[in-house]
Image (cartoon, rainbow, N blue to C red; front, top):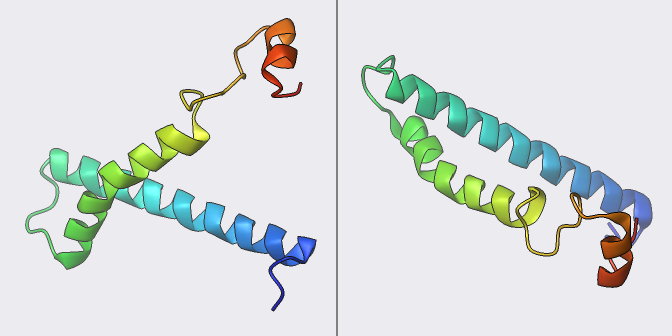
Length: 87
């Protein structure tokens, strides 16, 4: 399997996005259930999701949110051109 092929790369990136999204949603839902006292006893999977939550939040903030370094989502069009970030 050639990762340099554009279709293969797009499919792998899409799969990675879906796995990241699933992990983030699952971690948040387990954390909310734990916070509300709906989990009587935490099993190994619940502990895994709770431990992954801070890591997933940091990854989200660092690479995907508007708070990432160099994000120009809220910048004026003139500032986007100066930064080289494109429209």
